Image 1 (cartoon, rainbow, N blue to C red):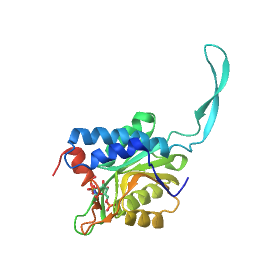
Image 2: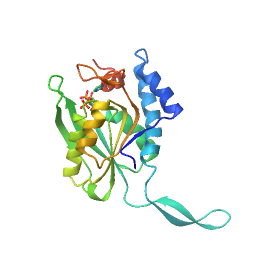
Image 3: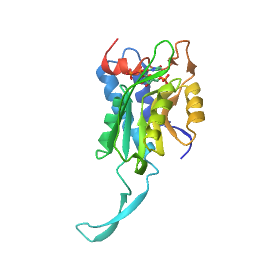
Length: 209
Ligand code: PRP
Ligand code: URA
């Protein structure tokens, strides 16, 4: 898989534009994030290994394709990751789920860890970490470090919006982890917000602030 995939699909781009609009309601924002996450999940799982299974259709026996290997893991970087997680689980309902609780310190912009819970056998599974925003990448880099410490070595990172600075920092830190994102915006502002961006994803999803 390429190091960075931008899902430049008309449906994704159209929905993202509505999400960026500051007048979009909390309910619409959540619904659109869930819808886009289906399309990002489709891309992130494109290269899953396949096997076959013998089944009987109403007409005849056939060797039919199935996804091979252990169930995959979605790792949600809290809080905003949950908005992507829900849609991913719509498509892969049997996936295992890890939660990585991190918040971005508003002064230092360092990621601060407050929770971690993951399935035991990460080493045997594809782990797809999800967080809508890749700004400085401090949060994503730490989350991937934590998952690697717990044995994960086959990883992907799915985001909605990324800053070029974050993409660079992430790929320097974790060159083995492909990024799948809907867009790479212009830059970070002085408060390390992605611009033009969409604001604070967690606040917009949950109506906080
Ligand atoms: C946001 C976002 C990412 C992080 C991105 O989370 O969801 O986790 O900031 O910024 P970074 O790339 O500079 O680390 P936030 O800390 O606001 O927490 P929340 O999801 O709980 O709102
Ligand atoms: N976190 C967000 O939610 N938005 C940004 O633009 C940067 C970090």
